[in-house]
Image (cartoon, rainbow, N blue to C red; front, side, top):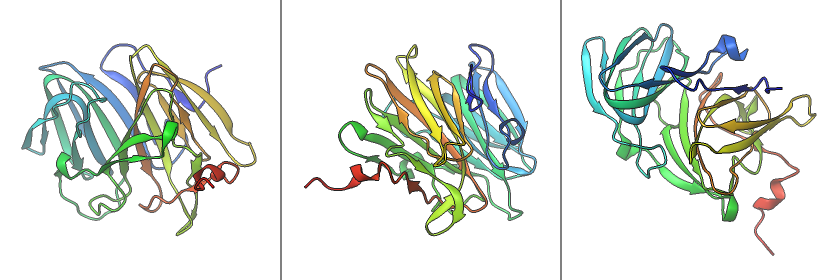
Length: 270
């Protein structure tokens, strides 16, 4: 039986996967990934939600209310050590995305807050990149729309590459209790890509009392929903894993708590 937290990808067609607050049973995060062949376009409006459009692969032009943002994107693979192109669009805007070459784009959304913000291209050169963890817990992180970027209402977006045979989002951590500065409540989606694409990875989502305890075998383009609880990921031998995280909650602040049972591994060796 497929976990209720696992959203399987469509093998073909424009729409790869779609998550709405209604389909997820939560309040904030929306996510959609689409394929856009060269020369084809996709139109949408933001309504009452803010949007971060991420060009995962390929190259697109994006027109927002008549203003054209041309030539966004230069990656052929999400596993390239290259920052993605991204565009922030506030609520109440109409968009048309035109693929200059075959493209895959992510549409990450959250509610607006009534404050006026500009449309802006998020400079790939300004995106922070770094590594977390060590040994087989090492992974490579790039902040696309982090919580210290003031240009969004609720939305946070980050991408991670986990080498083969490594763990990620580990030690297990959670962010489901709104009590800053100790922890904040954020819903989250994981959009998974694998290299080679026939691979798979594993993600577990669980709470302290195990009232939620789901283990998901994820394949290329699948999404895992994290409504609450800890959510570690493991990439098996031979397959490196990419995921795009979208987070949003009542406040735009990412503060997590590690699972106390596994926090020992962060202590320096004696």
